[in-house]
Image 1 (cartoon, one colour):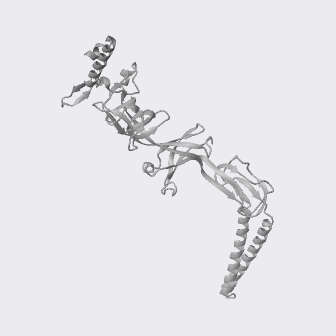
Image 2 (tube, rainbow, N blue to C red):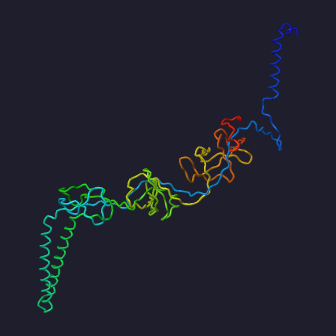
Image 3 (cartoon, rainbow, N blue to C red):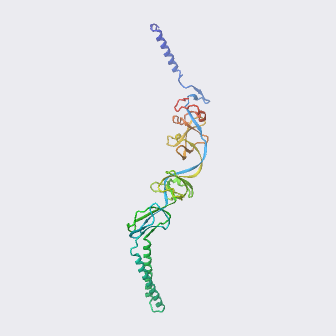
Length: 374
């Protein structure tokens, strides 16, 4: 007491305050107030829980779709080549024009083929007369069987010669194999072509195809005749049906080719355009949410966070059955699940939270941080 006697009263007051605060800290007054649960375990006051905004999921019946990224292709295409050597003497169609089956695309000069044909026909007439005479003589036993067979062989050779020259003459004309468009014609009048040179390329545009590849699982869900929709990068949309599903996977990608056939009577759709193909395959019960609500679990599972009946955060694994730029439709969450729409990034699975329904929270700010702000 003698030591404190010389201390100023203000200092003594400060020491007293410090001792009081220290006693308060030791007594645990800064700990969250706890209540005793029925089982004796302490529970945290709800005012200290993190607030999150939640929404009850509403189921919808939707058609699950297989989305295929592909392109348009002609239903048929043919590269026409010269069958014989010769100069181009006539062109019947220009590039880009529509042509009918049998239309003349180009004609090559016949050179002396017409003269060869006349000579071959004359020889044929002679061989026919010789064979008739040999037959008459054989009937009178004035001709041997060997001589008759020789005349018969000569007649067959003469007929073959005529046929061969007629085919060569027909090969001087290049015709369209089917209705379509003359897409390419790399020759002009006077061009000399050899047998095997490309003369033209013809595309069939009606119908036209949208083609792409699907996975092994997606292939099992497709059936020939399924209806589908093709959305071209040009903004055009066309409906069609599945006409072909590959029976063998591509060795490099392990995917299967799929073709959607679409009517194109006005030739408005062209080949080679980037296309998205959607094919509905089945009806499912799904939930529509924003893609921003999706997250990954510690095991890299895709899912969403929600709360159970005890307001404890749960992770619900999901599968996406349809997606657009703004929404995704998912399956997986249990019936009646409440998903966290605001604050999901600040809570962990197993943590108890204070959920606020979206309709209730519409006029009240819900904190995106821990600590239960208003």
